[in-house]
Image (cartoon, rainbow, N blue to C red; front, side, top):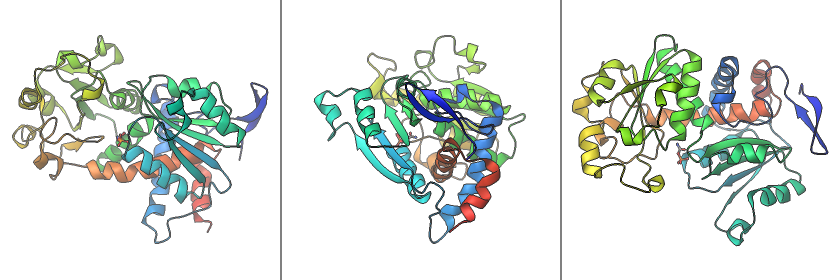
Length: 334
Ligand code: CP
């Protein structure tokens, strides 16, 4: 489908066509507004496949995809696997535990050995920022970033945008505030890059210790009080406290964090009745979000998870050379 042959470290690979995302999906910082909208529109077309009784189309038949998950994951890993299987790709999933990574094999050696078995794509989650880009520059297979350290989580940013678009239609005039541990959050970075490109105003709110230095330079408004952020917003994206990435005292205690920064039902009432509440998961109920908000009528958290499968199908399809124009006919073939 529509690619041009190019040369990559001694091997030929397909260069992007006009609709393509390029060879790899590393972050939303690298995508144009048109490319982001293309993914959202293609995901919209693919949603219906997951509603079928037989959730399978032959779009990626013959493609081999490896999911390399070197950090824990429930939503991202399983939705990539579902997306791959629903598009008929052959897939294997590998984690550091149980693979030769635990014996000291490097990321590139692991990937090159997989390449030797003739694969087409790698989905990678890694604890180091930059791991996806690093790998993409060293192997000819398409590489998709499923979250790298505190850098980006592009498919999460895309599924968040799709969920917002489903409910509110347009990003023009929209005010989205990201609340909590922005400092350690790859989700926050992908949201900021993606939503600003789509035309939304983006705010961040949290303790100063959990906001990146010079975060204003990313084009966001900074709120020091959650109450003010709620009153300003049409959408709240609440982040998990990433305690596993905190190596010093960023907050006094979880209880105090909840009291000052937690999204409670009482606080939510400061916003409009239509305020959307997103959370990328996994949630720490009673810390950054209370259960009656997470499960309440403003929450679209499980819709985010549903949209994750469609967005990942769209990314896999577009990276393999598909175009939005061919999506409808591709998914119609049984
Ligand atoms: N949102 C997200 O990345 O969740 P997982 O860590 O479960 O994949």
